[in-house]
Length: 393
Picture 1 (cartoon, rainbow, N blue to C red):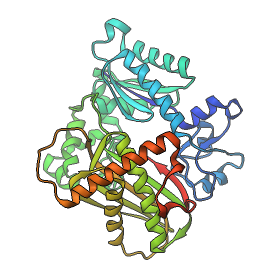
Picture 2 (tube, rainbow, N blue to C red; picture 1 turned 90 degrees about the vertical axis):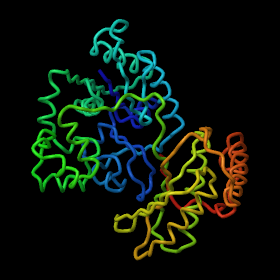
Picture 3 (spheres, rainbow, N blue to C red; picture 1 turned 30 degrees about the vertical axis):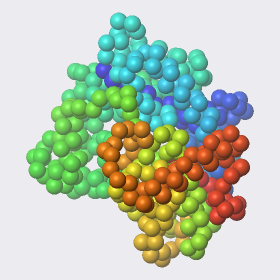
Picture 4 (tube, one colour; picture 1 turned 60 degrees about the horizontal axis):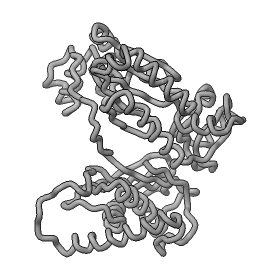
């Protein structure tokens, strides 16, 4: 049995815990400008139709007594670390997949902690007793169902899908609940009249692959209750990104270039802190009409230098013909791997040598910033006041 734990309105719940005046009040964690978006909404705020990623000005329209609290990622990360420590007490097989959720393989733990339900209840009790936070837990024989189950009875929920219930559960599971099914896939689902995961079995593998690509094979397996995914204790982040919602829409090249540099610095700093390198860069632009575009590039060698990230991100930006003003700028990296992982030795081109030199500079700057604060040293181009609100992932 695999357990999935998902904290309830995590950021907002931490703020309500630490400030009693916020308890039972509609709270969102976000910036306070009209340009900001909701990071997390308390359940009291969700009653008004407020949700994550909603622009703050819309949230205010829905609730005139809404309380806006600025985020504190260091505090949330410290709390997350404590949650993972609690989970590791119940099983050595813990896979953290985000700051507020994780999978736990509880097979063989029954002798120590009792039935799956007993284990889930004890985890929820430990989290609440030690951290004054509620969580929702799902348990199922296969991984993807445990995640779906954890979302079924929020907040403070517990849902268990037994082996004998899997077949019937899958047959009636709304297809949009399956992880990985986005807007584009849903259009195809509607065309094929696939309403539940069980409906997938009506189609041969060839048609599913034609319509959904590689996802078609996985969908057919999931519809048969097959999920080979396991709980991975050596889980590595798949991506790191940093976005800035600008205080006003802009279209000037130098202004956007400065934002790309700023976000590249943030992404590079996170990479180095995590001892990771990347081989794929992407940028994201959101325009004044809320439409957006992305560009990405695969690199021949791995990098973690902020300067190298900026250079590649800027090149991607130059490929885009701006026809609208920009309201959000984002830079991100994927294809991450451990910086210290062994690699095949080869002659290092001059470009790579320069990247290594800049990495050395970046590590020195990181060390100074860690000791004296982020504002103590920065690129000359970033000496002006920031134009917007950032969001790092």
